[in-house]
Image (cartoon, rainbow, N blue to C red; front, side, top):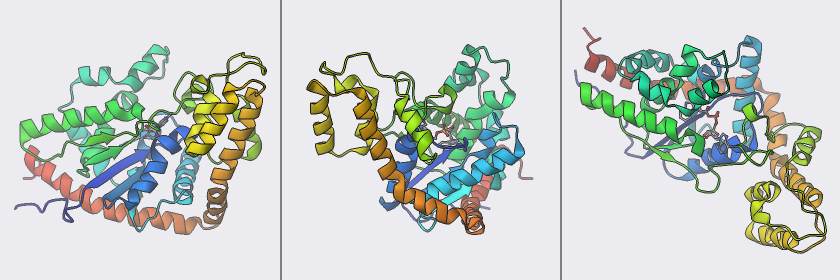
Length: 335
Ligand code: TYM
C-alpha cells in the first residue's frame, strides 16, 4: 500500500529540540529558543520539542526530571512560543523516536559515534560515567530530526556536528533501503550561534558552570553577571570592547546605538568593567521582565501547559507514525 507523504502542506518545515537542564541560560536563549519563536512567523511549519529522553543520559532523579520538563515548557511559552503556530511537544510522548533509534543504530558505524564531540569531551574529562546512552545520543537526535522530515534545524553552533551526523545516517539509510529521509540543513545564526560563558573562554553551558540563567531570581543573575571574568585593565585605561565578555553579552540585547555608545565608553578612559556589568544586568532584567510575568501566570495553570504539550504530541505523532510505517516497510518489518 503506498503511504501518504508525511508532508502535505507544501510548506518548508523547521524542527528543533532543547534538553531540559533545570534552568535554561542565555546560550540556549540566543543560540536557539529566541530564534525558534521568531521562526514561527516565517511561513514555515514549526516543530519544537523538549528532549527529555536525552536528559536521561545525565539526570537520575525522577522528580527532578519532571520538574525540568515543566520548567522548560514554561520558559518556551513565556518567551512567546505559540502552540497555535508551533507543534510543541515532549519527545517521550512520541514512542516512534525510540523505536526508530534501534533501526538507525543498526546502520550507524561505531566509528562515526566515536567522533561525536559530546562523547569525546566526556572521555577527555576522564569521566567514568560514560554510558551506552551517551554514546548513542547522536542517533536518538538523528531520529528526532529525520522522523519529521524537516528542511531546517535551527540550533547553536555546538549542535552542527549532530545535524551533520543525522544527514550522514539519513543518506546511508536511503542508499541501503531507498528514499525515506530528507537530508536537513542546520540553520545557525552567524552571531548568536555561539554565546560565550561568564568564564570568557568556553561556550555558555551548565557543564562548564559559566551560565547566566534566563529566569533565575535577580540576586542569582546579579551574582552571575558580577562573576563575569574580565581582564585586569585598570579603570583609567581605555579598553577594547570587542575582546570583552561583558560587552559581547551586552551586544546580544542592545540595539546599534546602545552598542556604539557602550563601545565609546570602553575606548575612553575612566570606565570600569563594574559599570559595564551593571548596564548588562539592567538589560537582562529589563529584557526578561515581561516574560517573567507571563511565566508566573502560566505557572499557576500547569494543567493548561500540559494540555498544550499533549496537543503538540498529537500533531507530531501524526507525522512520526507515517515515517515509522515507511521505515518498517522499507526494512522488512512489515509482514
Ligand atoms: P541543548 O539542550 O544543549 O541546547 C539547546 C539549544 O541551545 C543551543 N545552545 C547554544 N547556542 C549558542 N551558544 C551557547 N552557549 C549555547 N548553548 C546551547 C544549542 O546549540 C541548541 O540548539 N542535543 C540537543 C537537543 C536535541 C536536539 C534534537 C536539537 C535533541 N534532539 C534534535 C535539535 C534537533 C542539545 O542537547 O541541545
